[in-house]
Image 1: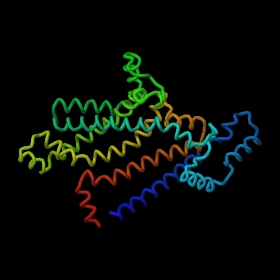
Image 2 (image 1 turned 90 degrees about the vertical axis):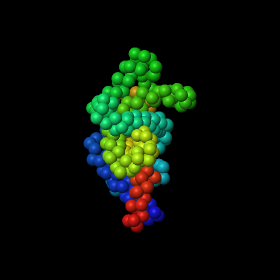
Image 3 (image 1 turned 30 degrees about the vertical axis):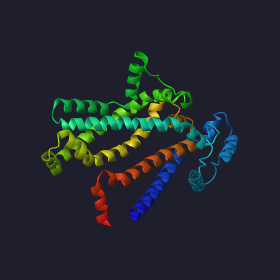
Length: 319
């Protein structure tokens, strides 16, 4: 077990390093000069050169890469070109919006997708199954920002139940802040829930054809008892894998949804940093997002054994 954990840790570090190299390289070859963008079209070459020196942009790329990596490891992400404040402070300020939004969205997607997929599988080839799969197809076809607009039209403008956008801050009250995040989280969750519903239906149907299901039914368990006690646990491995993969799509979706609902989170900060050519902020944000996705996938890989004991046995045999 210790050897497996060491290998996973080394793989995680190697993946993070490759991601850092790719992120740095891509941002370096982007057209435009951050100093020229900050000073405007009337700036003289001397002024631009002086600002580039002040920002450290005239240093060799390799030196700037290692300075960025070392700063990332120590919590010093540099100074934002646009805001002239530490990037770490900007991220810490916006994280209390994006993190609860992501957690709320993934919770909604899991509850909707797994429950509806299990119900569809238990009623396979019936009207309930057809209805759920038709709804899932709609969820796959419609972008999350369009869901966001529809939710605002219905629940904010027509019914007046939820705010149309903005975030009052957690200091205004937990439930007030949660209410402001419900519609954006639902807009993020609906497409991901549709994917989970389809994956869950397929996994449950495969598990229902196994011998242990017939054994459980022969012992007197009802269909729902068999589904709850035996089938769902065996069907969770592919569902859990897809759930981890969806985290990357969820991260990308926050950039759009936070702008639709005017939420002051990391996604909106990313959008503003790209528009202002704030390269250091863009690099740090992309690295934070990529690191979160890589870490989530590593955690999922480590927890597979908790879901399916057969995987623990397989690892024991391989050792």
